Length: 210
Image 1 (cartoon, rainbow, N blue to C red):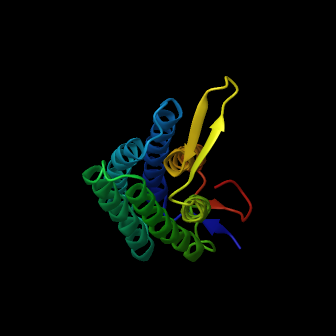
Image 2: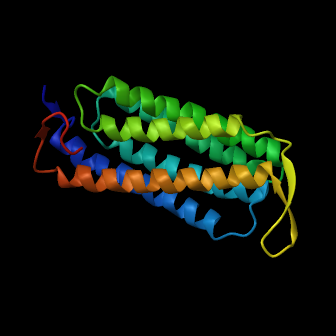
């Protein structure tokens, strides 16, 4: 059964959504990767900026994308969840590890589930479904990983230089957020290039490039 992008205009517009999300996620990953401070405050501030910026731009671009109403509604709600989560993270930037884990976990669970549902609903009709399913599944996995992380984790260890250090839930949680952002950023960037490259091919066979 052939799989088609929603419309030529929707396809042309939606690659920009993927590109914006890729840029925001990769920026988040780079900031976390090159920061020596993996505190809960850093996690809340960087996540907050990412979620508000990515959510606002995704909201605006999705409204202009021409996607089917039911699918667009799910993605618009996802964008709003991002904006609200990011705003809360910035508002409670000094609240500590528990708040960081709660906000990011809730965001990942709700936003990931919404995107996953959108992809599953469109899997027989739209090649864009692969992008939604992949990103949604990765985001839900982030939520699961954070749920399994003990919020009171505080494990002492000595590094290769012999200096005593401590592994905390904040360090692990911020690290997981950075790893997720890097993977989703690369995945979305590939999706944006793939969708943009398919501009002249409105109908694709199942199993072809998205």
